[in-house]
Amino acid sequence: MSTSPLLRGRSFALLAGITFIAMDQLVKLWALVSLQANSFKIGSNPINFALELSLNPGAFLSLGAALPPQVKQLIFIVGVAVVVAWAMGWSLSNWNQPLRKVLPLYAIALGGIANLIDRVFRDGHVVDYMVLNVGPAHTGVFNIADIAITVGALYLLIDLFVKPRKA
Image 1: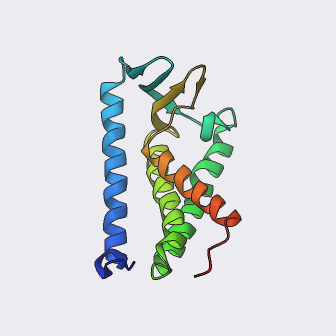
Image 2: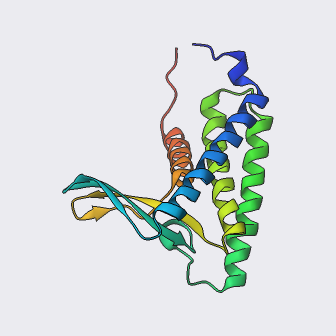
Image 3: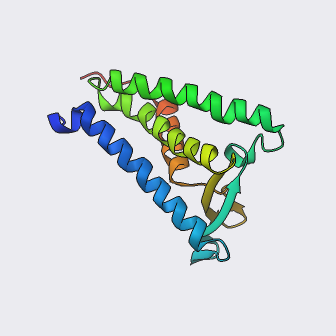
């Protein structure tokens, strides 16, 4: 199955990426306004999805939140910016490769950019607002950018261990 040349163009990739980041930021603005004093739960026990505001000063599950401010800036702003710039550059320069090779890294880069925007403009915090609860277990609070990063990373991890089928 072949992908349309329009979808394979770097211009489309850039437009889709800008759209993703804009949507992420709009939803985060909605969360900042609507979830400031409220939270919402969709579903009932034992499985539900909650919308609640959290300004995360750290990384995944608030890792690094207690680090000194200068160290957090170095890791979460400078370090992330370097990795995101490399991932974005690699993805776009290799956009002619099969999408299964470039799209996961592109998703990680886009999610990283969206969360980096938060860190730069929201005093080092990332706006998180979703929690999935399954019985006593629950996820950390996350956002759309985190989903892109996680899906991209999981795809890369799975791709390391799964051998392609020979035709």
